[in-house]
Image (tube, rainbow, N blue to C red; front, side, top):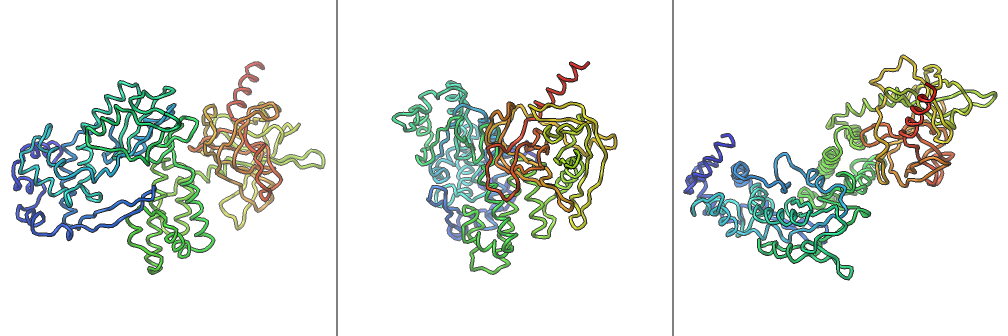
Length: 561
């Protein structure tokens, strides 16, 4: 049946037989599940650790009951009309959309509802179905509540539980939306995670305030939660200003929904362990460390299990983590593509589509280049890159007084026989020593599709992830140097605007490209150290934002005209 047909049938439910019919089973089979089988025989219960050190009990239904509950979830989802503030367990909504509502706010206030599922008992489910807008008769409402509940409560682990929690929370959502509107802030709920945010310097005291350094929940908010039979988990209350890392449903929201750095850092460490010690050894190590310890699959694997079992578990966890990066950052994100390629290579499986990864590498091969010219007996070498619609860009200090450069391309695909191909020479269009840029006319043979596109370097901020690419201390046989890192500071350097980064800029990489998370060009590498082996000293390692060079070029050309 389609959605409208299901809704029509739902509002005509009167008896247990009607409920069985809409679920596609016989009334006899339904009676068997409800009255003949002991509840403890229909569920597998286990506990998983929570971040605060406590445990959460999961009650997973057995296969046949799970199928019935899934059908019930489909029926209730057709009937339930989600509130605009609700984001959890709703088709076409996600934690990303939830987090996006709180981006670039002065203050973000997070609370967590205590024992969320266990607070929703049989009577609440039955009463919700018997009251408006559903108005089911007693027998139908009781039957649905019996299917959905375990030991008198809504089990966390049943397919029908998520949609029922949203239905139960409709009155709460209505009340908190009114409160948010009256105090000029934003309210969203993702399951039991509640978030308020505001552009103002402080929240209205009815929501939250600070007293003697302690975060106090406002009386109006507290009373509203109590009225709807919910209680705040005191351990999960957070009020964060824009100067701190603001988080909503596991994502940072200071500028845009993004992953925690620790998430990516951990995954890099895992792949490093795989490459260094092998997959079986790494898998066993991370089982012992409790990788993904709050996930159900960790309860069915142990370090003492067979190698095949442990490795299979490990592979599933890695796939899940990589997919989550794709979910948050997108299919073209270089971090996602890099991990996807690593996974395919390590496990020798084509689990992930990495065609975009190869397109990215092909663009690097064609667009990030070695620049070299001789000044008497001295060879001056640096890096440069083609920018679509602009030309060849590098640093002015690399070119010095040279009016032209020989441009070399390194084939980074075949490392067994890398070669350097001379593309030709380029005539200078514009340069400035203070900003430290030089722009040359690109050879006519360059294909626009194989050059990088321009990004917005005016909106860069500390903490942004960037990718740096260049050719430090290049010798024949080397490929390009590429590193993903973060912007660490913003400052003037030698009289020009400058961003420092957490990565290393080695001599010879100057003039190389800096990409944002969308693989768009936003900077020119500058500064640097003698080698990649030197200790990190990022004081003068960074880049010039591209808009400075392009604005100067346009102004210079306009003056000339």
